[in-house]
Amino acid sequence: RVTSSTRSPTQLVRGLASSTPKPTLPDVHPLPGVDLDQTPEGSECLGCHKNLDPMVSAFEAHFDYSRNRFRANSQEVADFYTALNGERSNFDPQRRGVIVPFDTFPEPYFSFKGVNEPGEDLYSVVRSMATHPDFATGWVAKVCQWVNSVECDRQDPELQRIADVFVQSGYRLDQLFETFFTSKLVTHTNIESESNYPGAQVSVSRRDHFCHAVRVRMRESRLAQDRTSDSPDQNTDVCARNSDLARAIPSGGNIRGATGFNLATSTSAFASISIGNMCSTDLNRYVGNNRTFRPQVANAPQSIELMVTKLLGFPTQTEQYTNAYTHLMRAYGAYRKSTPVCSTPADFSDALKQDEPACGLGLSDTESMQGVFSQVCQSPSLTILGF
Image (cartoon, rainbow, N blue to C red; front, side):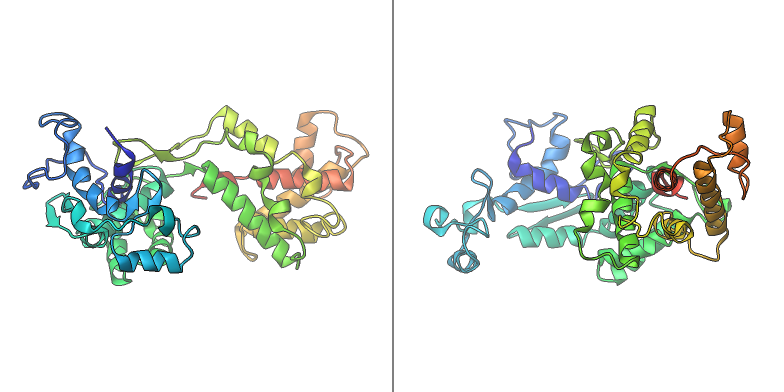
């Protein structure tokens, strides 16, 4: 049984939860705060509730879950919320202002994997959680699984190194992300003998990754052209404008009772079709003179360079940049060449390999640039993590 008052402890403990099968927890407190009528001893539910339920009172001392309001546990707290503006801080002293002291609730208790500490309020429970020996490693393991879509070995020396950096930084999340995303666990620059992972793990870009990447990279392209006069999301949020299509892209989430994420690691025909449709729909909004990539059609080399550096993310003077720029310029030329029109798919495939295509599709300049944009939008740089 999971009630609204137990959801917050569940979410917090997930940051500590092991990626391995749940071990037996020795020396656990004698079940304070556990409703044995609902979760009797010997039941499967007790395995989790004996650690979650004792923390509930810490949350109830601060929040009234039945009314979704902050709870005044002292006059000082009531005065504080009143000064902040009651309704805006979700506290109304006129209707909900009864003082409910801490000792109204059972003493909270934190117990998880060998750490058993009584508390006084929510802050003391959070301190116990933050000083747990698995706190730093748990956060790194979560980030690692989210990025690579596989459970990561907590004994990996590189993961332990990142956890140490996280601790030394004072648990700064920005430092954790910077250290992790430049580590061997992401770049895969280590040799196989240095890691428990045989080779690089390349994962499908899930919905949050894809939509955020497209939105941010298109914003950057606008900033590169000093396009700051209009709302950026109006012309950059491809997923928001095609929400029905975006729902078909795999997304990540949690499963009740699981310590790790539920993550899609491969794509499907529906997801590929949805991304293709999103990248080919309403192109007049994104491509054309005075549109997102100004001047998209009037200066094709400049526009394609912008797509390669901003949307694909390839720096100039790199082999990836040269190859991508050459391919897209050839594609643009083959799209717009009108005489002669390619008669077979094989002829058009050959034209894509030529600086001066022998045939083409006879599209307009705008349609040709839109075709280039559609290719970029569906490229592995946006749809696959690890490239």
